[in-house]
Image (cartoon, rainbow, N blue to C red):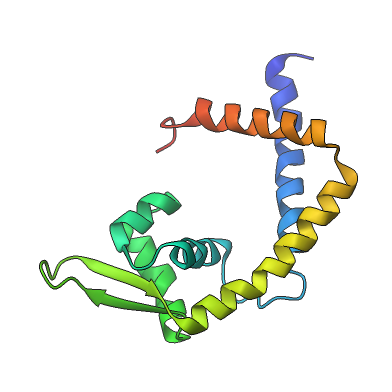
Length: 145
């Protein structure tokens, strides 16, 4: 089997694995938000407030996408948005106390998912998987942006 054919056979497996991980992670939590919205809130829980443009860069999306993702979070009271005092064109996004509580509810799910994986994958395999994912990430950087 050629290298190209190997990659073709690997692609559905990667998609299936991602789908299973996502389904496992969403068990028992409010799944009304996308993974991108949750990642947005996780970034904000670590550093808040952030410029919407900086947040867009972190999430690898456009500033417009950050606005759209933030609309539902804002409506639910999980984030606040405000304009900069020095430059009114700059929009800052901050997580609210309610948003912090919401994100903390996911930590238990993260721990459960990590526990499931750790029970099935050896530490050596985990290091190898991390090495391969980092290599893939680096080799694709800039090619599709």
